[in-house]
Length: 296
Image (cartoon, rainbow, N blue to C red; front, side, top):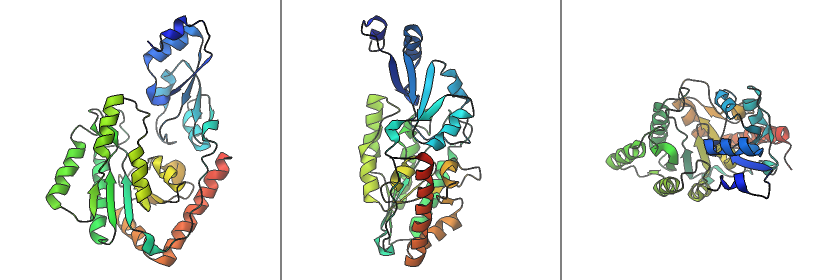
């Protein structure tokens, strides 16, 4: 009914902003029959090496508004009109401040996911990330490790309805002292199921990020958000395929492709001198990112 009112509203609405993942056939029908200009707001990370041809079917789009200039390549390669949105012009990455290695205590892995919607990832990619992250926790008992599945895992077409339950059973059997599954993920799943909004944000993720010193993930845009919050970040990709985090690893943000590299990264983190080098390299990558995007 909300969209149907546009067809009869005497006060002409000229522009409509919709997130990419919340687009529907109803939106298409309304904008096509009213002359309302439709703008799409990027609401998830879209790497350069990911297919974007499906967006050509968003035929009623006037323009795609992206969250950084790096994302424009994704749209331009298929001749889609785009520009960086002013909504994100303040998203400058702050540079890391130096800290002592003993300050590193809590490590968070923010999972992405796969599903029937892509042939470019396998569901087993997340298994590899989880198992290697768990293995790492056994070698660094002085650190606390937290694994956060993506809330969308439980969708039938995505990771699978029992994907998180498998992890719960695994951890219940082994009872590790320094490795925990996100305690808020069930709450976020219930929130998603209740609102059915793909562009939903989760406050509990912010709480978990604030509690941790190092954030790992595969190709989540959350990693860049964490860099802006004075967190050390790294992308983990054990798939033996090209990383989807390529937009950012090309700038110098760290990419870890096997367990040996993962262990070495953490050995460096607990060494004061080597950790300073990690901070220096992340800051150099952040400077490049800020320069490309011309933030306020």
